[in-house]
Length: 153
Image (cartoon, rainbow, N blue to C red; front, side, top):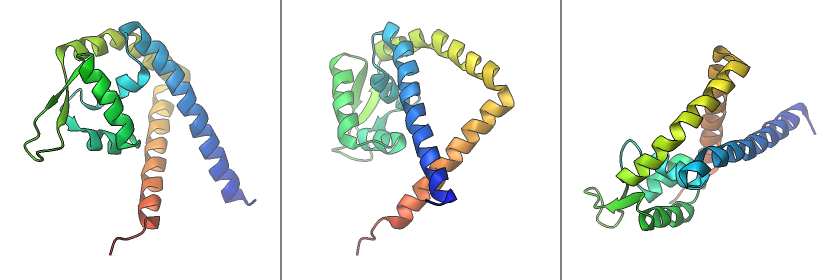
C-alpha cells in the first residue's frame, strides 16, 4: 500500500472507532430519558422543525427504511407525530411532540456536561478545529461519492 491508502485506512478506522464511542456515549446520555441513541438522533433531526423521513435519512447518511422504522416507533410512543406535508401529499412530516421534547430536555444536562469535558480535554480551539476537519472530510467524501455515482440518462 502507499501513503495515501494508509491515510485512508487510518481515517476510516478512526471514524469507525469514533462512531462506536459516540454511540456508547449517546446511549449513556439517552438511557435515563427512556430513549435509545437511535431514537435521539431522529428526534434531534426534527427538534427545530418537522422533516420528511427521506430528509432525515439524507441528513444522517442512513437508509430511509431505518429512519422510517424509528419514526414509526417514536410516533407509537407519542414522542413524535406525523403531520401533513404541504409540499408532498404522500411524504408526511415527522414532528416532535411535547413528550418527545421533554425527553430531549432530560438529556440536556448530561449532554452539556459531556460537551464541557470534551472541550476541557481538547481545549476549545482544538475541539472546534476537530469538528471543522471532520465536517470537511465528510463534505469531500460526499462530493467524491456524488462524482462516482452513475448518471441517469
